[in-house]
Length: 259
Image 1 (cartoon, rainbow, N blue to C red):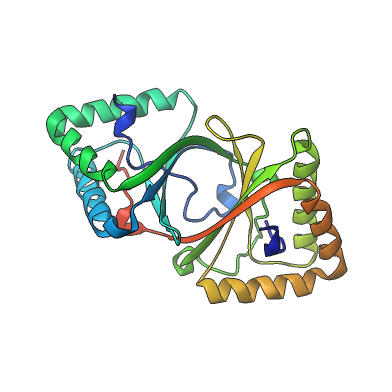
Image 2 (cartoon, rainbow, N blue to C red; image 1 turned 120 degrees about the vertical axis):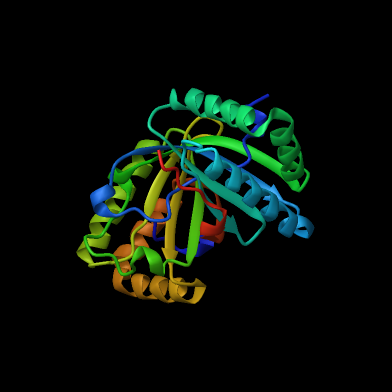
């Protein structure tokens, strides 16, 4: 969401999970569950890490892996790789698919590739996140087309326990204010579920570049005026902690299932 930045086994083989689609259009504004993998790579081994992931993606393509994966890299060495699910029960189907991939590749081959990948990682975290279009701002006409997006921000927001309803209501106030001011840059809101330190939300925004995003932010805050400043103060009062990350979508490290 727009805000002042000063707020500032088989499962073990999961090396390419993720969070958040490259873009969400109003006509696609449906709730969506994601299984999130947040992997921190050793900066001295990024080249080796990405090469191994690309080799894995080649095998996904070759053997018809049935689930989509969208990958992002952040400016501080994290890799977010997007894995959408229809239901929580789909996680079982996903695990089964990895087992089937191992049989097609050969279990030892998949294990060897997995070992190469994790050897380049410092840590890995798995979480479920849920996209909430009802507390996201999706303008009818966005400023950017999907192919123009080259920069992404994620603001992880830990809300004071018990204040979730107030926080979500304020998101709706931001939606109304953004519509009233004819803003054209969306904010996408996700809520953390299993595996996260709840209550936690993520606001996702994007631009052509870091400079383009900064210019759009400046324009936005000028348009919001005193109403925006007052709403920002109300928002900050509900936030216990916040962590921001920046990065970009990585089509070269992503896979679109044909099934």
